[in-house]
Picture 1 (spheres, each protein chain N blue to C red):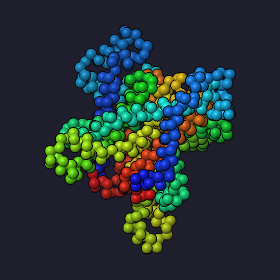
Picture 2 (cartoon, helix red, strand yellow):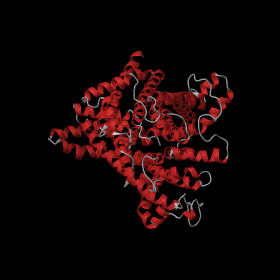
Picture 3 (cartoon, each protein chain N blue to C red):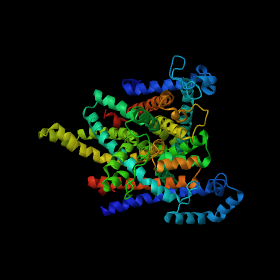
Picture 4 (tube, helix red, strand yellow):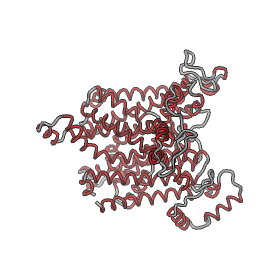
Length: 278
Length: 336
């Protein structure tokens, strides 16, 4: 309870939580509000209309309603980011637990592989891997997940090392608890909070990266209502149709901002060392 | 100090070697038929067979890796299927543009981020601090490619203050290539008109690129200054009657920023990543836009070469940053 009160006092974090919840709610109701005609078919007679009461954000070059497309686009953005983060957690957390708890050559190998992945900026490596497994959104998702897990691995490794040297783990080993029991029941809950913080910020980060891939034409393909792709498609109609570029970008900004503010707030909550500085 | 530099350099050898293995695996092992991947999408079976023997894909895998290592050591990363030139030559030609851009972005980010972070720490929990928190978190949340387009929309398309794209105006004679950094070359040639033109072209890409870095620098400067403010020597300096501004901007800042320099190495990775999209938008002839073109044309050798080169530069930057850090703070060199 105390922790909830503390969280609610942190205005930016609450703002972040509100944004994230709103975007999630929007993603759920979007198909009910926005008709497939407005999102995919459009009306060529109404192409490139400025924002009005009928088309709140205006229309794009094919006469599709931008407001409807931005709303439906939130589904894709959240789904992709969630899949990427889940994939990265699914690889990174077990790898980090293993490498942090054991001191075999396998542990050394895992950490050296992590080093290699961190030796190149994530986007560059993801581009190369996406290229390898083919174009399209699925391969972009796999590429992002395969390049993001080392960040989780590092975090979990450091935390596991810390927990491993504590007295209660020694005691558990002493009374004969199995290694898997110690890891799953005792170590995992202790490393969970930094992972949750990383995953929250990672959601925002991945939405941003996916948008870049969509914009470059490597991720989502037309006619998907992807935010990054929409910006790329509308770019040639500048400067006259500024709305077609502006609103998808604002949607990215708001969503990522929400996840970052929330992640920041969560970090302050779970890391007492940082709490002092505020 | 020499020992520190040597040890620091030895540190990166395993990860660079690992990177070589990774690119090798991606180049030769993972594709179902690497010969087909290398020959390109529209290759005939005869061409694929020619590639297979030319690259020795019929050889055992460890032999192939040895050949690959030898090629890398000789800076032979293959020929681009698009430009028809060695990818190393392509990258060497484009690298200075990216270096110029990222360096200016980093400079701007530091020049703005450090004072902002310091002020936010000095006035922490004030309105300024809260506003800065939202702005810096926002800076990390903004899509660089979108921000670039909005800048283009406002400052070149609407106001016509800045050039829309490119590195230099069409028709403007380029200065003799000495460093291939246009700002430096134009000054060396004493051509102020070219310098001004290049600078104007640089403003928007550098500003876009610096945004994320600015936010990060402001954030870690703030954390560092807050930490240092609680040290005993600050209380001593106050008791000794130094002016507050001198304490903060000289003693506190020096002690906090030194520790933060290591972050700049990490920032460089983020800068290179956003440079990929930003360079494409501004038609900046660097390796970021080269990488995008390589991907869109399935130019497999080019994209892996970019990966390798960026990895090496990243390692060099981090070594340099650590050396600078050790020079500024000798305790670091001793601890390694």
